[in-house]
Image 1 (cartoon, one colour):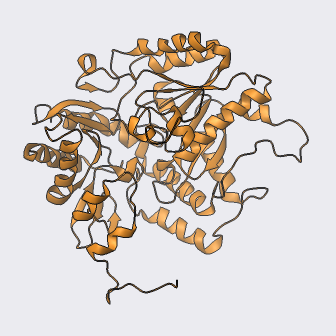
Image 2: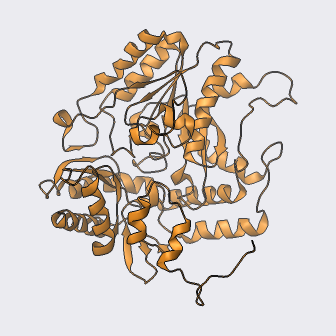
Image 3: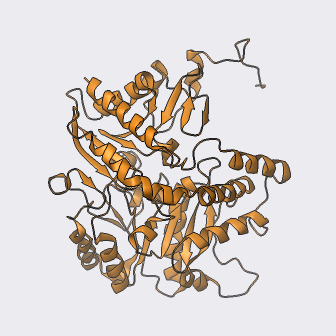
Amino acid sequence: MTLVDSPNPDGSLSINDLDSLWMPFTANRAFKKRPRMIARAKDMYYYTPDGKEVMDATAGLWCVNAGHCRDPIVKAIQQQAAELDFAPTFQYGHPKAFELANQISLLTPDDLDHVFFAGSGSEGVDTALKISLAYHRVKGDAARTRLIGRERGYHGVGFGGISVGGMVNNRKHFGTMLSGVDHLPHTYNREEQAFTRGQPEWGGHLADELHRIAGLHDPSTIAAVIVEPMAGSTGVLPPPRGYLKRLREICDQYGILLIFDEVISAFGRLGFATAAERFGVTPDIMTFAKGVTSGTVPMGGVVVRKHIYDAFMNGPEHMIELFHGYTYSGHPLAAAAGLATLETYKSEGLFERARELEPRFADAAMSLKGSPHVEDIRTLGMTAAFDLTPSAAGAGERAFEAMERGFHEQGIMLRITGDTVAVTPPLIISETQIDELFGKLDTVFRTLT
């Protein structure tokens, strides 16, 4: 076979041209009957191929925190592509990877000082799990092989991530997963927490379930506990007050590493550089991705505390200390994008802006209490979730209708999971745009069948 030109003279696609792509996390047949196509973006908006404006209420996929096609970030990527397109980071290095690692370490609390780059959040999670297991082994504690996740947790789509994750549909088709994994209960209870702004008062005691799991398996066999400080993809579940602090205390008691998956929560989503900073709890390992480049170039990674890094720095100096990495770890374009993105956050005060806007954002979200089909609303930082009453047509049908109506009728992009609609806009959103966003969302809810 040879490369061929587009079958259409003008280079465009027809509806029949959509069949070749198997789309990720998408109802492919429904999409291809009525596509939701995006051709370009700028600041707070996407634009369809015919020029229709669509407000981005999802920051892409929780990632475009600085807004779309921002000039400083675009220019940094363009310049880097012309200067150094790729360099291996196995046994070689390039300056911007080190510079970005230094900048990230300045944003993370305490002695979370050592950065290992990956290509995505999923890769970051698998990296964190592998480092946890390897750390105990190099410390002479090889019995610690068990990993603890949490129900309703999302940690990407690698086998490690779906093993410690707690989303049924992400797991059920793929076999038995990793062995030696257990799960804490999730922290959401609508009866106790409905229509909560910020952290619920009820639920901190659920961290004590780690005692039960430790007793069941013996704590000396547990390597790490991984949680999202705020569970995002399963419907915006803020941590109950005291929950994360209690997890930290129990992990310290048993010598278990605590991993925060901050792929969603880092880089301003909750009004701080990290959720660890917002909640005043420092994990041993932190994963990141998404907002580090504002979604422009794929990048993820892990930040570890000094004692973890130091534990590997033994043996002959010419020997590899950790047999792990990815071709695109610290990719030059991603590093350039990351540096420009962090500078944009700093120069425009976007983390501080998110803190200032949070009350206005929460008020606007909670104003939809009483809208048709809305059973619960949760807010934290610049994030909100709306649980809808399931349709008689089946689970997920009503939220899917909301997404379709939002895009085609109201010009707004929404994120759905099951019958939950999530709203997570870029941090550059204005107060006027907040009102517009939730006004459109209210109209969507009022037109649902």
